[in-house]
Image (cartoon, rainbow, N blue to C red; front, side, top):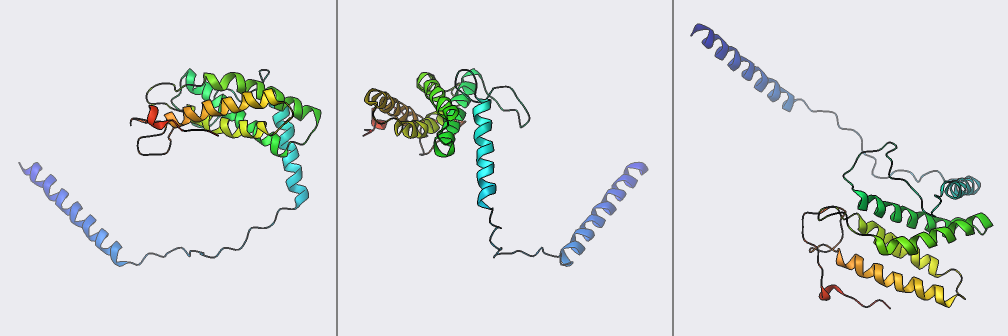
Length: 210
């Protein structure tokens, strides 16, 4: 019993000490870091340095393109592991390829190597975009592929305007991707990559794409 009383007494003393320390800490004004609400403009990057960085990026994309016309790989090379199945990795590859081909169209120039890379990427997207699906009821990474795919197809549509059949195929695929993206809109509006909430679907979500 004596030992129990000693433990209780010690506990009360520690609690009182901590309370006193906390009270004292509240009374001591802590220094506040100065907040600069009006930072100076960033130092301009010389145009030649920007152009050099762009050229290096273009060269990297051309050299790093996969044999099937895509970019990227499901192998983990740094970063944070995520929950993703086969369907998710397929959607990632299509989304990344869409982003890369947009970059080449915008700033890649008109070299034969860049043109060939764009053609290969277009063939990949036209083949793989229709196959993109959500992985399961929770993982809907496919929305990235649908969204970026539409943007990439719009830019591809502006190339080779004299090829009417090609333009028609791209337009048809844009409509398909638009409908898929609308299908996976959340019930509250907007999109997410993982969800435990229902998504809107059905005839009331169908919209005309002109």
